[in-house]
Length: 467
Image 1: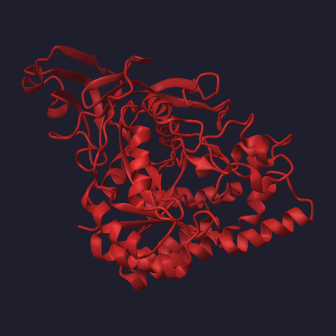
Image 2: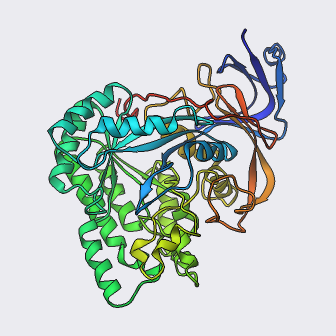
């Protein structure tokens, strides 16, 4: 039995085009588009019709950076794959790429299998995996080749967190050399962790223990220095590089310089760096702990450089780095010692709306919104054109978006499994109305109609900016 849906009367927006078109969906894929009101569009027949008059019809968002159920600092991220992917759907995101973790002394395969077990049968939307490499050795390097062959094509390394995920320059170089040979993409957390640990210890010795000191010790210059070092190591290895959660203007400048030199270097930022700042980290009564993440929030005057980088394509992707910890009982682990506050913010549900607000505010165009939130992450991580666009043959991951509806972001109304919102009380214009994942309604006119287990694991090809 084939199932057909037609979405009528909306403004279809992709990274490349805007057109008033009807969209025909058949058996989970986009079958055809035709200009609204034309004979071709009127010939579309379907069991289900979605009226998108006055609305946008956009590709489902692709969030290339999430951490569901991630262990950190003696606790776990509070969203499971079930709650986190449901919240993603509410926010118009229909694909996440999460991070499987290699344990020190363990294999990549063991880490990947553990994450498959967490996700399988529990996801409301489709998902893929990156692999965190925390123990570079001969066996790890061989395993990287095997993972690329089976669709795990990106590997994250850390220049931060000594004793946990940290890799030294030699380990990073060896992994980059391997990626240069197998087509994989190295993703880098670029902060000088060894220097930061010295500054943390010195701050605590001076009695500086409040959340705001988290931002002060993780200096922008140490993000820029590590970004520069990662770029040059990748250049020596002949490998591409993707720098995650870029927050500082000095780091953007390093990426811009590398790209001006023609290097295959890419950058991601996150909504928290575009909309929040050190003012939030300094909120009194330990409220600042809600905003502790790494790289940290920067002074507000860094935001202009991030927006400029997004407009100029020196930053290509906006992901969330969704890694939520409840304020009560989790963030509170760091009372009296900011270094013990679990690092991470909730955001998987807010990204598409915040970026639409950026369209309303004039920071980016509508098509650039779709580029940085849907198409570019899909291309970056080998999912395009199956994901990230509305075109014949693509998966029918489609969002009907009301650009005029107003909403107030709040923990009282969000669907993430966390007891606060990083954007509490923020008024935004634009809201998800209906979401289809492979043609199946997950959100139907602001009602959840999805189910755990609908989302399937999606193997990825290599980075499509390197073809």
